[in-house]
Image (tube, rainbow, N blue to C red; front, top):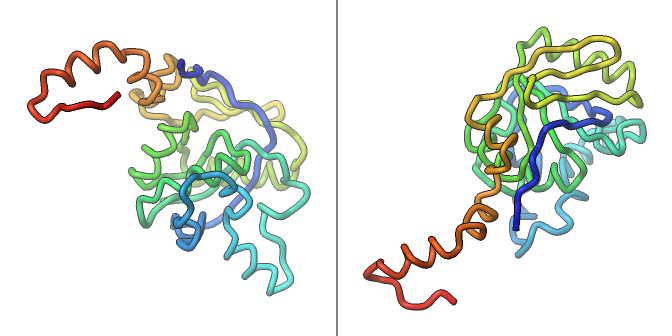
Length: 202
């Protein structure tokens, strides 16, 4: 099993405005009872969607003009709250392959890395420009270059930030911990056999 290298993410964007959008909003707690992550994408932002619909509005994740988006853009402290890995799983299974926001919860960021889903950051003013552009051009694609840490929208290239460690993992494929273990299974077995509590893990 090998990890794919994540060099570029291209696709339309979906604007999810607001600060402190927590993991309970991204995927409500009742969906954490599932044994697998299958089907979580259909329930991303479900309670927010219902609340906005009750007021006569449409959440971006239900708005037809944003369907099929690959890049989610939001504001500060995105993914805060509980550490549930179901949140990035739900976004990824909805179709999101990269996120741009002002800042993130550290655990949410790490859970996204483990899915091969980069979380870029930018200043408030830059994020607002990207949000406004997506809202005005909902069917126009953005193009993110991971190595260069840039987002291209229209004729404009926007610099983004991504920690060097995470960027390196995306570019060399080591973001997938399971793939790394399987690729080095003989070494794993050798180390495991020296552990005093090792019995049988075949």
